[in-house]
Length: 156
Image (cartoon, rainbow, N blue to C red):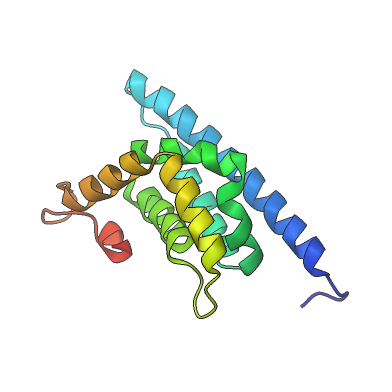
């Protein structure tokens, strides 16, 4: 617990700033990872991005984070990069963040924020995201006995 009271305005500002900064880092890592993949070298960008996506997911589960995330330009810049993710752990956390933003927070659903989130996400690359999600469910993961990754199946 904090030793001093924090107003809602400060909390909202902290959430927005933190999610914006993390989204910028995720975007950079996924861009860099895409460039490295083209050369055939395996990079750790997606593994690090997964950790940042996990943190974003935790922040998005807060009412302030939920209502502000999808409208951040840094987050919107990440959306078209998500279909390029190959690492299952990173896919899992990307799907978790998107699921929370699209589904809403329970038990108190903010229908207006939910509509805005869906609209922004679909306009920023919804068709590619849907085919990315479906292909992730259908892909043959050789590390397990065929079929999609258990992590990806957990999100679906």
